[in-house]
View 1 (tube, helix red, strand yellow):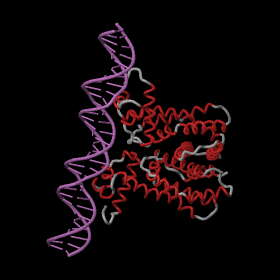
View 2: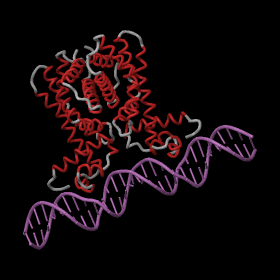
View 3: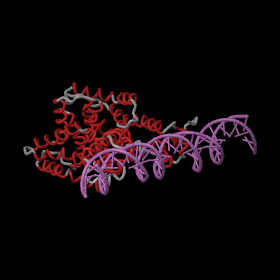
View 4: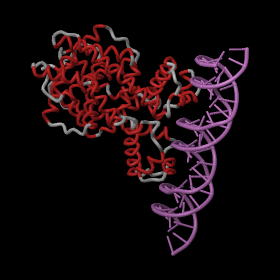
Length: 191
Length: 191
DNA sequence: ATAATAAATGAATATTTATTCATTATAAAA
DNA sequence: TTTTATAATGAATAAATATTCATTTATTAT
């Protein structure tokens, strides 16, 4: 590993990795392709990372933190339950629309053999504030009374699938469409 | 290919393929592992299939039809809009709970390089009855007015993610939980 | 400007894995 | 039963791909 990491180079490698994994899956990722796409030599990848597995894990940790941030940051919009929820939902939805590869990368990782138990736990930690927010909403009778993990799964699954469809079919979502998507999310969790 | 296909053998191969792809992705699928898991020799796989790619595609076509059937069959429960929708939703949800590997296999396929344009179109055809049902629901002011593709994505994404969570965390869903999950789905699409 | 150090390179090698095919086992026909 | 045809086998081969390392290029210090 170089003493002073060239952040531009690292960013290029991360970007290439994410884009290629999104297309081909983890086992399909070829180091030669990552190298070509990020504009370095294959050998250079091994200057920065011990192995393909190490590369993938590094990219995961960085990306997962960013993705989680897209939701959690919005929590600190103070307002009514509805306003805060709306800020979080839109925060995440728009993030996914802008960064579908990152969304897909993180999603895939959880079902790949690559993820470690430690990383699963760390990952869950990121979402603790969201759990608290939903539990608070249940106490105040806004939110349906059930395991918040199921609520989160419902919300996340719906957003991801919509974004995947939009990206796959190259549809342009209008503001009105997004509002109805939000209404679906809101109506689904409230009682 | 043997003249009289040994259906037991084919089933074993399909089952092994689905389970392994679910764990390792398409590129991660190893013919030697499929062989071992299905109790045949590697060479035998090439008696039945021209290549790994052919094997995967064959498994996809059979599995996708079965998965689509899990939703569509329930449409012919005649009743109110709510009753029919409930039958379809539970039909698909329960199918996914019982066959998470098949659900995951089909889901992954759509984002793998393996799918062909022809298969995408064929796939969409399977769901035409569901489209019609939702459009009818919109005409009668039951269902939110938006592109039904978005509604389907929302419903499917939510179901898949919940099932994935349940399987991942080995939770046992109680009847009450399932009812609330259905309520989330119903509330999300109705206006 | 020169030397010393660090980083990058990519062709060569090692490893992994799909595919083949000569051989063996099984089933069907005579 | 013997012959013929069909199916299955798995070790050997070919192809694909991760990793190494001797060499080159760039950067920093004197």
